[in-house]
Image 1: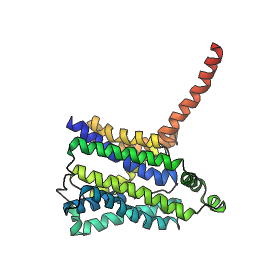
Image 2: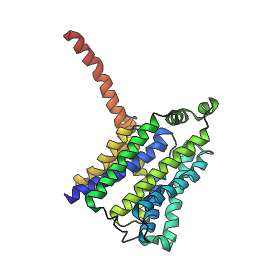
Image 3: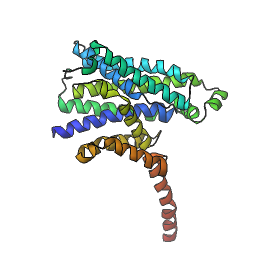
Length: 290
């Protein structure tokens, strides 16, 4: 039972991380290849605070704040560059984060941080907290998608120049997307650190950034249900099928190739296509029945 609780906790944390990137890349169209840096910033912030006696709730809020501020800083770079250049810029941020962490003894250096305090909620209580936060992030994302800001995000993702011509403050909304997305990533990082009780530079490297991006792409860029399903499946599958665990990156690469080749819309696009094909057949059957 304890194993299932731990697995569900990790799934909930991963869903938050994937939804946080989906807000930036899926909603606003800003490609990020360094998202694990914000995930890590939240993890280190929350861990350092709780290790020095700060209550867990305050540490988690601080993790969101620090990651969000860093996201705004990186967001300023997105005002100058686009597409491939933005991807390279964010990738550089990820490498910079790892380089800084490795060189700072107060961050644990190469060894990382050990003995991160337990939040004191118990296994089940902590799992429920993580699930509740994942649901809250999903509901907020749904509200955001249907709000005026969400429509502005869609316009920017489709064509920045046209969005600017019709009066949308592109800079403001880009910064907002980075701030909110990275803040959620910081929350996920803080939760992850206090679940695992250890963090190190290798926990938040380029591979982790690509893994989170793979979940967004495989689920369907911009699709909340698709991203949630992809995050859950890609987290659980290597745990249930142990022989896959050693080939996890190979599996992600193969899935990405298959999605981009056969279903660019990801799982969400595949589901929509199947429903669209089924509808005419159902209508014909109903018409024949009449």
